[in-house]
Length: 362
Ligand SMILES: Nc1ncnc2c1ncn2[C@@H]1O[C@H](COP(=O)(O)OP(=O)(O)O)[C@@H](O)[C@H]1O
Ligand SMILES: [Mg+2]
Image (cartoon, rainbow, N blue to C red; front, side, top):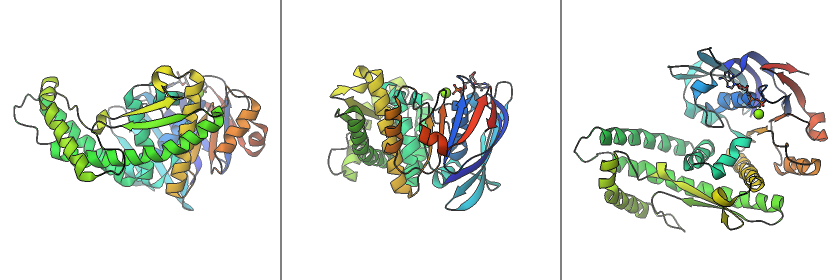
């Protein structure tokens, strides 16, 4: 998996830019606010159709522009493709692969990318929606069926919410479909978090010299601890829906299901969200992304494109080298820095200087 070039029009602070990338390491230098993170975001949006920090499309359109467009040459399984993602304010996002109209799910099927950003600590200390968004972006890269069920689930959920708001006294007819797709979503989330939890804990232990990071899935519906039994979860789901029926009618919103899932992170036995120090949260966030990178590499049988934003800012040289090593064999790497990067990376990488939304390859 490789991105060879990127053409940007009216994205964030970039008016227009044309970039050719190296197959290995690409390093973006520039001062604060010049557009380094925006450039990583553009790459992520091209590959997966959405912002790695959960920004909506309208805010990514350049001020006063009305539309953004990204086009890139991408190599997938050794075959070249041209991907384009465009969004017009007030309109819909349009994706094409080789000039043929495509869906976000097509991008998730073809491409894989992992970003590590300063904003990642919100996965640990932000609202629950941040944790669900994290799961969705990465689990959907590992499982097409997850993405399909998730999107069906959200469609039904929107219908149910509309029904609850319409003050229609009839029982909502949507619960059976919520159960069907919701159970699938929760089972996959459980497996995913179990798998990455083990790897993340290992990395955390190494980086922090022995401290424990634990990740515990706390689904909206009780799904049991050991083997996951489908009928049992369905039963729990229906029962909880029944118990919440009156409350849902009063509040006019759906209260039961994976859209209410939570994930509990603990560091050294304390809830990360309430007790984690900034350093601990940063280390945990990085461990999480290392885990996701390894997991996706294994499942997809190809190294995801790796995007590292200001990863080295707070680390000394020794720790920088160690951190890069812990990603193991990576494929294509993009990294940003306002200062400098480890020498061995710098020597191997292609360098770009970014100044107020203008990119120059060096
Ligand atoms: N939609 C937008 N239109 C124009 N400028 C934007 C838009 N979104 C963000 N910016 C600008 O981009 C700059 C931040 O760029 P960023 O990539 O975060 O910088 P850095 O190089 O520090 O990572 C800010 O000056 C911000 O005002
Ligand atoms: Mg930045």
